[in-house]
Length: 138
Image 1 (spheres, helix red, strand yellow):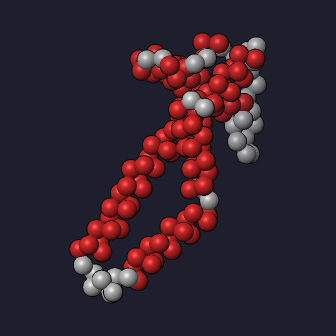
Image 2: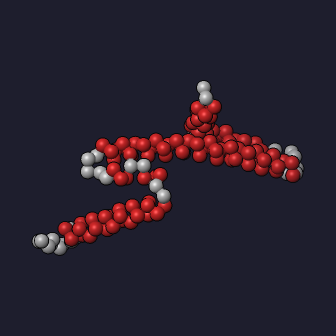
Image 3: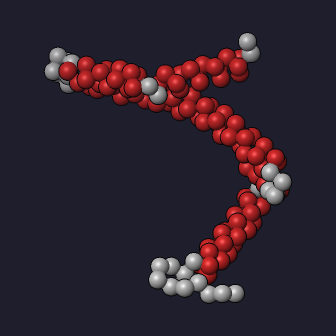
């Protein structure tokens, strides 16, 4: 197994495990045990350093695991959306792989769709004037 494939498998497994209620309960239990040992260690600096160091290390490592799984999920979602666009005759294929475009091009596309949405809302408002009012014929 390649290193990247092994990391991907590990990251996905770790993300699934850490997202379960049992893992949360274990972490919460660890905090409770740490808090209960405070009086034993007289709440000294070493006692505080244990939890600070432990949580910092776990947080640091989890950032990379979560980012890896998030990147994979986002990439898979983009591929699925691209396939839906490609397979829909009325859709514009210019929207394929939109996430790879530069910021200026993305902004142009965003404005284009904002204008389309505004026009659609205006058209809908003309066709449906609301309760108690008659639609204008046109």
